[in-house]
Length: 406
Image 1 (spheres, helix red, strand yellow):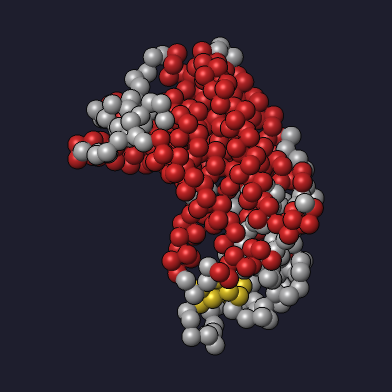
Image 2 (cartoon, one colour; image 1 turned 90 degrees about the horizontal axis):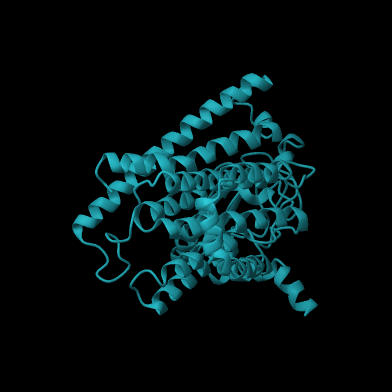
């Protein structure tokens, strides 16, 4: 068993999966360059700017100030400045675009669109359960990374297609955790409320989570064990939370302590996040998630207290035929109006909070190093994204009501 786990934790299975999907390093000898160059292969190649400074989750971001040259790919833990690139050859563009798209399903762009879409167009109760499960699962996953400190796959032999998360540790894969949590919590919350085949819903949840999990191998960001571990942790948490869903939902809507708890508990967790000896974006990402969840939870409570107009599934039935032209217009109108408000809220609050913190702590807003300090990063991201969550659940529904979209 230990030998199997060691194999699953290694880089070679990831490299073999990439090769089987048509993704290869451009050459055996790594090269660092900020511009494209020709390949001797007849196949087209794609070039991705990748930070070679990563010791696979142990110091990519601090490496920029320590060296001014590019190390070859063969140097494990070699440090490289911005502009250092890893070249790779793509021989199967179907898998390339499929897994690049699938990887985006675990990013902020997906969370900030799909979760509000569910709230505005499907059902409040479904959205509440998904957001709570997502917040809990992601917090546990992010903290586990910085406690376990397992490295990401080595490059070489793995080709890495992402740069931002290379400074994080690998175990567990939070993409796998989020995909499993969101897809199966959506399925579990809707299977008894909407008219669609049980097998279809189960298959959709399985395919969604599987694509995201495989995308983490294809992009070279996780080992097989990271992905399996992330999916299993999510499954266990879902099984533990499912029996208590109704109780938690009732408390969120009716408890007089809900507003206080939904703000204070996430803030305490963010300020007491595990400390590392270098900067990692995991704390900021965790603050973003908990902030959005806190703002949304506060909105849920206020809507219930003041009996706000609720979206129902009457116009959006999960059955075939799925949509009529009239319903489609309403759904799209709700979505685009809501996303516009969310993006405006994020831009406004980000600018306002950073300006206030910059004035208080005496640093220019453009100072990236200052913005990474805990006393700046936590309030900046928490206030910004709690405002986004609050706006999505309070401001947007009021605007929808004003426009006659409810």
